[in-house]
Image (cartoon, rainbow, N blue to C red; front, top):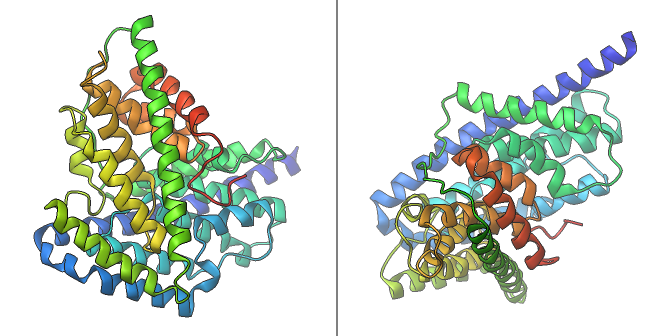
Length: 392
């Protein structure tokens, strides 16, 4: 009995440390990202330096971070096939790379960065404590979920995200216990440190009916196709740029293409996160070009080697796509936007349940049946495609 209790205390202690590290790093990241976004929006002329920022990011990773350039894929591979502890410098490298990407106008996200920081910092506990390979796997999963949940302000979704994105068939039940502790520890750390989380407006949820569920399911098919297109396009861009034998030149040239595209369409709306567009689309029907252009810009940004992530861009794509669909489907703009908010990323990351919980945490538990239906439909339509190459 004493041995069992001490084991649980040990797991709780390690998980709490994982969450504290993820939450602290996430808070610093969110503050820096908020500064970068406001600076870029105030001084839009700095976007002309995007190619230089891309070259700098490329040089940093090429000369000093080749072994961590795989990012989230490296984390997933270490969980499936542990070989060596993730280098500590993954955290500052991905942090600096992401801030540079956003400061100078790349179209990227943030949660991918939080995931890498959470996982790499949690992995450093292996240097301090005597941790078995199985415990290391669970700590990596816990750090992954804690980083995700801390960044978006959804600890329950974070707890499940780490488990669902990995999908290990043989893992001890205690992993749920550890992921739960780590995710909530990370989240409450960001609350204590007053991290600038994004807040979304409330929406009106209509009464349930078979007709409404039918159209939500129909929209889920569209969301799944959108996720599939995004994955194929991003990996396609990555393959095209791989023909440039010197990696730092990939984001350098992509920066020129992005600047040219911004000038062509006459707006910087698709640079950075695009939070204001997401919030607007929850109440006012979006234009159909919004999800299409965000898909193109983010695929070019992430696929060429800029840093950040795909979560918020996929949320942008899903929210604006759902919002635009309200013009042709007899469903409220807000409900379709929320369904897309959760479903497109859920399909692209193969995490439909975690994204359903995320929608519930951010928009209220009344959205549960609609978010779940949209997420499951989009997940099956998207097929085996995933934004994470290391996902099995």
